[in-house]
Length: 416
Image 1: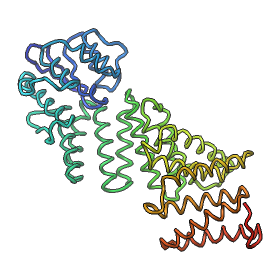
Image 2 (image 1 turned 180 degrees about the horizontal axis):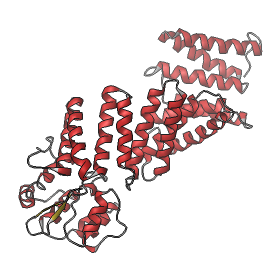
Image 3 (image 1 turned 90 degrees about the vertical axis):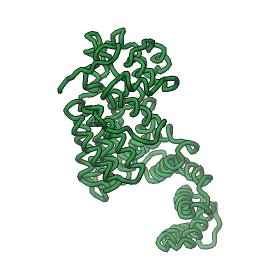
Image 4 (image 1 turned 60 degrees about the vertical axis):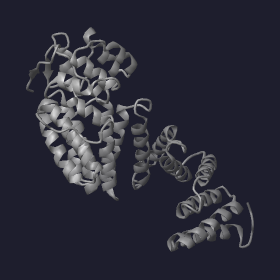
């Protein structure tokens, strides 16, 4: 890894590369001032690791990386360009941007424009200018983001490819983050292709020895979702996807990364429930799936995540209906309640097929409980909706369930 020094006005020289872009914002855009005292921390951060010990000169950085932005802002009291820039990253109000850019000099001054774009204070990404190394990589990444917003994924991928090449020799952690972003764009354009899988695996390799646990978890989740989507009926790819979901869950908790944690649990359960039941141990996976769905529902609520909440509710209800258990009746009753909660938000006007599927599943669960009158009521409503939508196969399935109830109770009997 090459190092070079940039002299800034009224401040100690800034040593490059700087740990920019790999860690979450705003801490991930702070500059490390030069000096013997700060050099060990700069090296650790460039490598993607949180320093075990922070010197007094980096108290603001320590607080920012811990999430205490108010404390970090208070600790940035100097008037040199690097301190003013770091204050600008945390609190952009009140800073003369033109003067700050000029005082930082090139190529550090370009970071002012980068921060403005990142914070949404301007719609235009910074120009590359004389920037090099990790700073150029970040600017190209910003330009790629702008290209995606304009509907130009091909240009975005070319820009990110250049950014990764610039970052890889200076800051492998940043290269890994950028490569993950490229894989996400590529998947949107190409679907779950082998190239996407390869990019995600390479990105994970670049982050392997870092403290970027949330970033690693996001990449494991992205890889799992890609493998899952590509799997179709292939058990080997589903097994790989499961391995990646579990890797994501080992890295983060629901408190530090709730979205990643819940998505990994929801999709892990989905993978387990769709695996062919070929071995005795496969039945154990249903129990794990049920627990994962319950975990996902601790994060997903109908008010905040309506789509994910409904998916988790329905998958949990379906799993309870078919899960082998000594508490069969208890599971069925819980499933009926879960279906009922979804029916309250899934009306026939906006989602007739979705409502029909829930009704059919609930009718099936009610029939298993021996509540045949209520089961018939739900199944007849489901049948009407399926018929109105032209889903003849679903109509035949519901007719089959109604026939089984009739055979069990006797035609014309209204039991419930």
